[in-house]
Length: 233
Image (cartoon, rainbow, N blue to C red; front, side, top):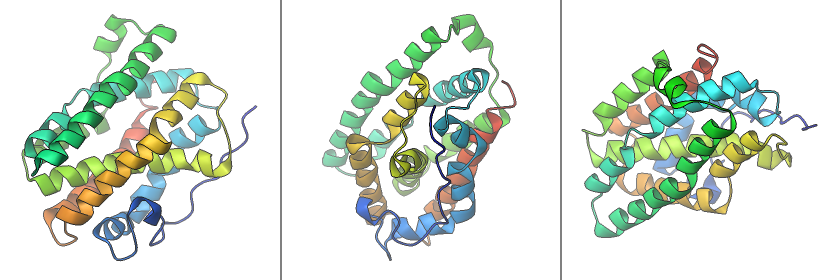
């Protein structure tokens, strides 16, 4: 039986200094500006039940179908195209290959293990939050590099934040699908990737630019994405 994973505490400046979001940095300021929705997202019912191994299979299936539909939006291709230097483009390409080799197979294997047919997957409608999120990203990818890298950083950082809860608690999930989802979003490689995104936000973004609103909007949409997982289950 999996032990209970405590909720994350309130956001504090310097929580992610180990990733480069040091007090006074742009990334840290953005993190604090979205504190209420951030904490609600990473302590959501879905995350709590996933980490405690009490999440019903039907909810996990519903969530991952939605996430796989979202995964296929192609945000990395847009980020590579907008990246201001060849060095950054190369880094993003390498990470995109990692996603193709590691994250995409998790989805396809999950759908197979849980007997989700292609027809069931194709027939599943997007949740309202997923529709709104995808529509919002359509705007972001046609915006500035600063907005896009801030959105990408926020998405990855928040996922690391919820997965970090179980690492901090020393709890390992016993349900393979739960543990697999945690492993994709916590660990040396994912921390390094998130740290590189935070560094780019610190370098290119501003707390006074439109990207600040992008960060807060992404956090809010992530919160709703978790909450909507139960609606179509």
